[in-house]
Length: 252
Ligand SMILES: [Zn+2]
Image 1 (cartoon, rainbow, N blue to C red):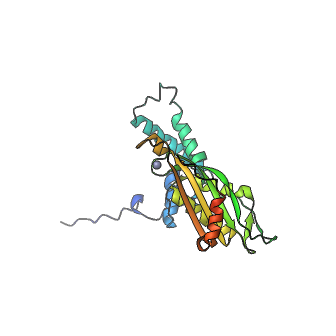
Image 2 (image 1 turned 120 degrees about the vertical axis):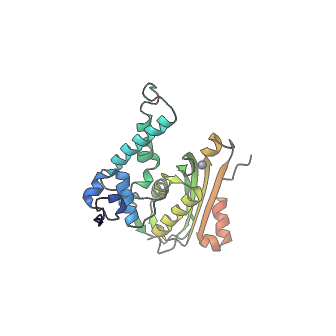
Image 3 (image 1 turned 30 degrees about the vertical axis):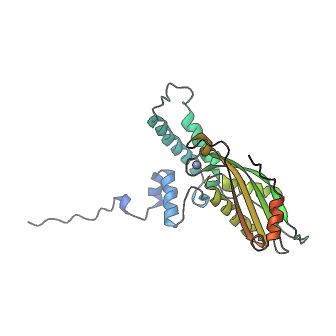
């Protein structure tokens, strides 16, 4: 006997790629933002800034989502958050800390930085630092505390930025789950693009709390990374001059 063929299920939105604004509005904010990122073929790793895909009010929605999921984590850890006054508000605190503070550099655009032309035609090595930076490692979400030194060799076409702005850009990049090597490269790319110097050098020395808190429980393990570009790569004397101006590594 003849069977009627089933019409294609148009309402199964999970199998469709295109979504209307109305459908998007019904999704959790994280799914909505992810949809926009995927549609634009943009990467959204832990240390990527996704602010261009986050609309007004959505950061507050993300915080509520993280809070609800964090509550589930506490539940999975078999912690009685109802009776335990210490953990009663923990999910909310952690969500706020992640979204508004320690991972804020993922959700907000770069702080405004005014660039001004190098009117004095400065061409001497400039060193900015130490800038205190805090981050979290992507592997364990444990804190990273460290210092960054930046060496800039400007030329007459370079744009200069105010000294305090280096710290603000560094903070924006570090306020994400990071990998130290990648953080230093991201900072170098940002500064290269803005300042356009002849040479750029960055050194970061940081303490990774996942090394203290877990695993090997090593208590004296600072990690040092550097990026050298342009004149700092070609000119060993310049490189030496920069490195000699940094405080000497304390040896144990
Ligand atoms: Zn780690």
